[in-house]
Picture 1 (cartoon, helix red, strand yellow):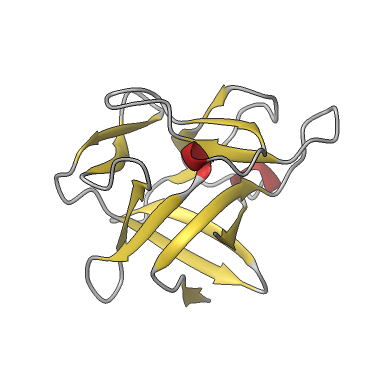
Picture 2: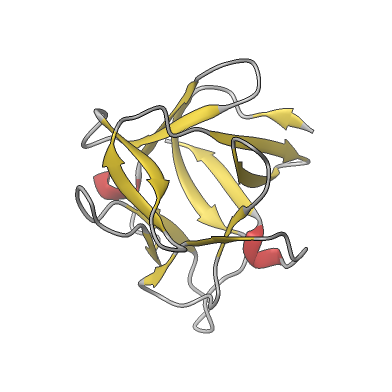
Length: 135
């Protein structure tokens, strides 16, 4: 497993929607929940990954690099930057994203358009797997 290289990415879930659409992380505004929406390659779907330290990284929307993905009530939210960090590890092109303490994973409860991205204990489910595509 290796850490993702810093850069700009479109982050998509490994599981397509029931309609066969690729679901990408979407920036919905400051203090708003992060959702997945049908991939459209728009600016709200581009994220900046930066190294925080040797093990962790931050994830910020391209449109608002002063913000970071952090934790809300069981879901990811875009918040004012405050050293919110993630452990992003990739094996053979598939990544998992955990909090800095590696206790919970990013994932989807349902692979549907506009679904909030949750964080919870690892399930081994493909809905907790992500593809980081260079933007």
